Image (cartoon, rainbow, N blue to C red):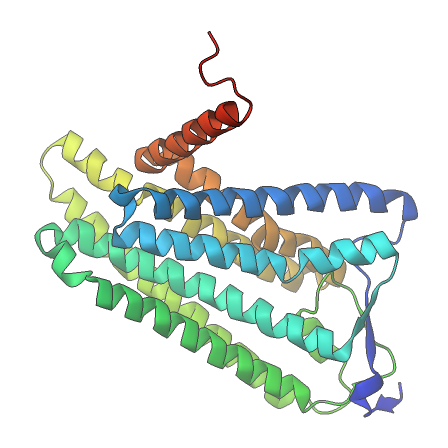
Length: 322
């Protein structure tokens, strides 16, 4: 392979999931449906939290931020993939690839940080209920979200700058449906040892640190719940963090599943398919998990739907229809 140092004219080819033309409409319809469900579901969560004063608490503040990040996370990859299928073009310019990679890493890491912050919020709520509103004050909540954004942005910027220093070969086919950093680095002609060190070190520190924080918070929560004498009290305490625990399990299990499956099979195609679980499926399921397991969210959504129905009827002139 010949080196190609002129990055201005570089174009990558995203191979996607299948080269079979007859499968493209099916893939397009499937991912369009999942994307619309993800955006609509998470927008409903944001709308429910913002419109109901009873939900103006730290837990739902973090939840609405998570929903916003999930929309952005999915939007970094799926719309471009759908456009490529529709136009039957797999080309992605160098600038677009780096931009997509930057925002994908940004929102992926931000997802992890927000899940960690939400675990800390549940720890304070269950282990220190009398001091909850004092500890989780608006200033601290805002600071936690701001720090999460800043650390995610800095990490994403570092990873992007490290990729920018690489020169690429003439073989620029990416066996994925988006510009995944590991796949991108493999196409480089220059030495990528430093890139791999930085990438894996950041993954270990940020991903491992977030998971450790979540596990530590839940170990304290379980210990606190065990000290509750009544079964009803234990159930009530556990139910307040059941939704978050489900989302955390889904996100980290799918991420670890992708890592181990790609490491075991050494197949980029298998890795691309497995990546759908945490890039698309998890953000799509999050609103369902929170709305189905949370009575407050349920009530807020019902109120929104009821108000929306009344407005539609009034516009149609059917409000007083017998």
